[in-house]
Length: 233
Image (cartoon, rainbow, N blue to C red; front, top):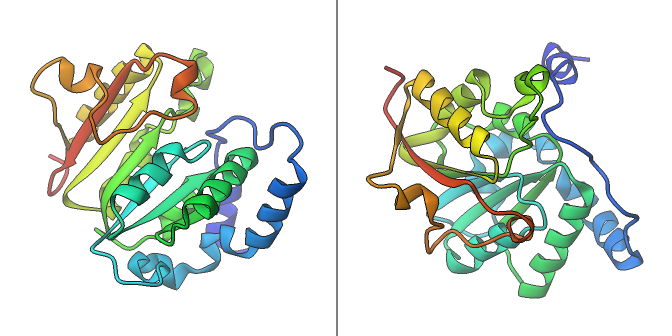
């Protein structure tokens, strides 16, 4: 075991359950057929230059963390065919639904990672992404669990490292407390600028920010967009 592997294994868990109801036969078959491609960390050289993950040239690469059933990821891929999208999801049932949607729509500009997004972030090259989506991270509402929240100093440093200057970080949550937490942590980091001129900029879902399966079950508390500054101030 390498030092890096040990560090990963010692990490606090930031997400909830990994598996839901038993997969249907078609879902299980899809997972099995795609299994070799669902571990992007097996390809560190490609992650260092992530545009190489995609069969055809793409003008940019975007990363989605916590896409659930893939509604947002698939919409973005359909509407931006010249962008390569990396989707990280720890919930196996969500990966199965995403694979079905990719197959149904015939999309070639998505690569999925079933597992911890931090492992992918560790291997991505510097300033290689134009946009990152963090969708409905586990709120860990109990105070003693706040250290497990994805939005923290260490992860923000990783997001800042892989975003190109001027790149966009989008974060959605249905928990008002998590929105406040996010604004405080981003301000504390100093490397991101909040892209909001009025309350509607974060209270109303932008036109290019599609609804997700999860969002249909809850009322979003806010849609936050940040622009990467050259370096923390």
